[in-house]
Amino acid sequence: MSGRPDGARSINEILASARGRIDRLTPSQAFAEFCGGATMIDIRPAAQRAEHGEIPGSVVIERNHLEWRLDPASDARLPWADGYDLRPIVICNEGYTSSLAAAALQDLGLLRATDVIGGYQAWRADGLPTARPEACTTVIAPGAAPAYAVIEACREISRCSSQAAS
Image 1 (cartoon, helix red, strand yellow):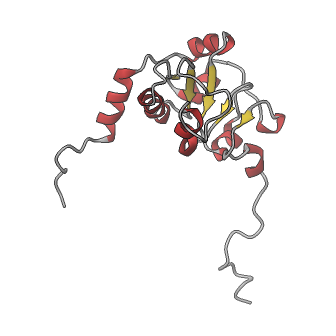
Image 2 (cartoon, rainbow, N blue to C red):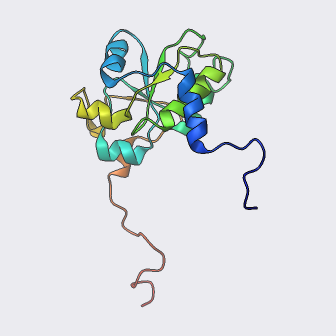
């Protein structure tokens, strides 16, 4: 199939639609709201958090669990996600996936969900608080991997190494 199916949208169109619905925050605005009681939700995978660092006080919910952990109607929700008046501020590495995630949270009825323009990279560039994963300054939601676990090097990378042939 070479043509786009009827109704299909490109990722750029989907992203623009998502961003048209959310009131995105600069890193400084997000920090101010975070300090005022909003919940910073870090959806980056463990490998990115291990490489770049984490935001102290944030809640780590990897992207594939986000809706289940924050939907007040879900049996898998976090205990504190029990109402629709939450102010989740979603952050990813560069501010793309977080826009899609914030729009998905709005679809669940969390109408105050938003994201951070430029993501963690912009947060760090603005000199806002960060920490190494080993400092254990974040809350790791069920199903999310702690970032410090991926720092340890793998010893056997491949079953087809030169030693296996000997």
